[in-house]
Image (cartoon, rainbow, N blue to C red; front, side, top):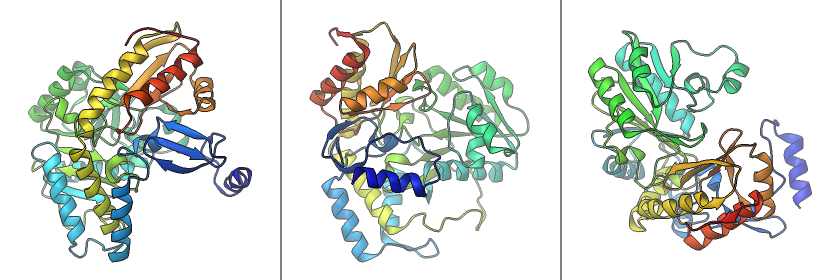
Length: 392
């Protein structure tokens, strides 16, 4: 089965993904199984998507029940599942973000956020950060920093500029009379799992307020409990003008959204739309995911387990390790060498992890991961690096 599946994908897919040589066919909680029955601890969680774990029974039940009831309903009409989700989102997002546009992915959320910012202000300029990552459709890609992503796409929208991350003076200098918005990640994910300082984030918010610039916070990867709070904004008391979210929002179903404050507006009818955005199936599941996160206190678990995970990695006596950083269960281990061979070696030892750039091992496990599972992962990391283990 494995060879046939891989042959079919190689034959008919576009080839844009660098595949790993494993065929995943089943998941449960923090575990995945391949076509040969081999079990893995998942520290990738579908690029940070499976926050409540794979095949969560309540997610599956909600999905099945809603599929039997109503799958699609465009926003031309009102819908009970959509209304329930919007109300829950207004309760868990930072204060003031009480209007939400529902879509299907992170890059769509960013595109919409940028469009609303420009339309609302009548300005064109967007200031983003070096090492920032916001998606790969053209507007989101223009805000993304990495030249290898940008240059291959050809002509991108104008008006975007990048300034050093976590340097408030550079941000202040970049703002001008045509700046519509500043877009930032609280923890740069693809850029190496780099958290910003509280002074920078709070200073950026104050600066944007003072200069009449909208602040867009990209929580596509950090949202829904990943960093130890429901949203990473909550660590710093931030109240952005626009908040983009996706990934873990619907427990594995494709879904995204952006929330806006009263400082964004007025928004004319017909400015934006999405055929599948806000469909009852995704909305019902997303509402259930919020309930699970709250009832099982998974953001708090992520904070506690993330501290333990990071401390255990720091305790490894490995000369290749340059730094371990992150927030909650969003952890990066920066090495003095390429991580690709180490990712393959971890997979051979039944641990799936991610890269964040060429030299950073990234760990994004489901928020349900236990300390025993963390210990198993750290043991395998130690073996791959040829390291001894100190005390966490």
